[in-house]
Image 1 (cartoon, helix red, strand yellow):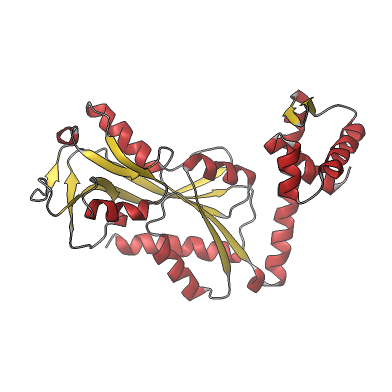
Image 2 (cartoon, rainbow, N blue to C red):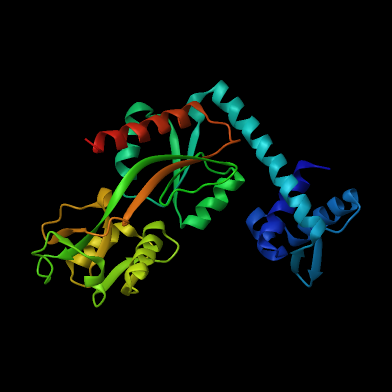
Length: 292
């Protein structure tokens, strides 16, 4: 059994399509198919049920996928550990975030401490982030909501109240606070379902008797204040994402349940590099500083 066979198998297993898997691996379909066939011959069982170029993992394949991912995960951790020991300067910090409002300030502080460390950040919905976390493909996730799991280390770093943002000319702009039920006839702008704050807001609003009506749903939380300022709709904005725009007024929400937890997540088995340890320290210090 060869390492290349495992890599090819995992790619095909995740996509369940030979053409797409070959494209992602930058190899020919013929080469990919032959490699998978040799792996099945080595194992003595078929790993897929085949219909044309479409493949579906069978029971053998599902069992083997878990082991193959674990094996490659351990090899990757060994590689990262050796790189860390040999040269910190070549480290790359892999991050995934759902709670992105504080990230620019955090990365700025991290770069001050470790200017030579590269980092790669992905803004993802919660389930996409959890998938990468389970695979061990990221060092840390900055997430809201907090995510629990057997292989997940979850550290709550901030309890963040969610505010209501309205344009200065809005009929609620003279208020300091508001009960959620008063908003049942309002129009909202927000992120799409699957993002932690959106799912939390929808759930709490439904618990008091209404479903928020959205005129805009996007993938970029930072753009919501621009839509509020343009009077397209009002928005629920986490306190840490509050913008000092003059044309926006913020109200506190009287319902006490409307707060989000921001958590720093990591895989319990992933090797934590020196750069990653420094990043965790920066995150904790940052949220400690904004509490005062």
